[in-house]
Length: 270
Image 1: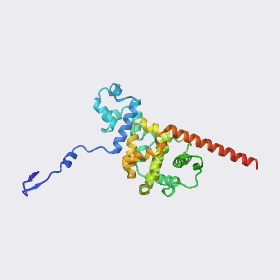
Image 2 (image 1 turned 90 degrees about the vertical axis):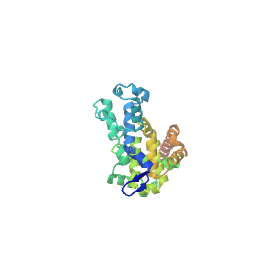
Image 3 (image 1 turned 30 degrees about the horizontal axis):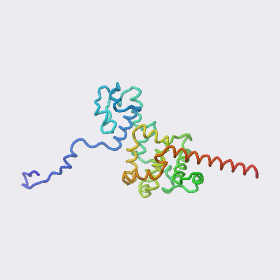
Image 4 (image 1 turned 135 degrees about the vertical axis):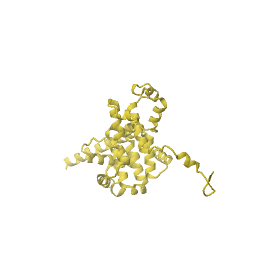
């Protein structure tokens, strides 16, 4: 405590407030962007290998570790470097991995196009009715995710939209519904975790070190605890087992083709 000399009374000092004085903590956006930037530069190298990487020759190991954790921003000369590897990493930092605008999807303004997309793919913040995939998949949740992915691809200029693009699209749909998404946590948690589980999305997310940060964003946005979020993923085998997911998709596709062949045969024999 210290004494206020004018009023001669005692004013307590909040020790937690004192701790907060100084450099403000970095935002989740800044941290995630830096983590992705670092992993773009590392390109699979371990932190110990990055210490000996020539462009980082004047960077101490502790700074490299802090880049990896997203604790400090990239140096300006690194961001502005014209070397090929730094140019590619800057694109990741400014736009997102693979030139897919992940940062805008997570924190940008919601556009009329996002709202239109949400109404088309998740009308009324619910799964669309009348989809056929449930006839071909053993797991009804996986069927819903597969339908979303198929419908998203149909809306793109090219039908080969990557799994990662579909996941980013799911983020936009979730944010477009806003409060309704928060009120329908189970639906949108399944949408986000399910689209993130497909191999193409998982590969990109892990390549850029974003698995845990994105999971935390999902739990924070939907207002569920991070531990509960992780437990919910263990309930669905395809969230964490790529082989099982691929097997289920292949089996469903075989059933779909068999159904189509049978239908064509029936039409030709009328």
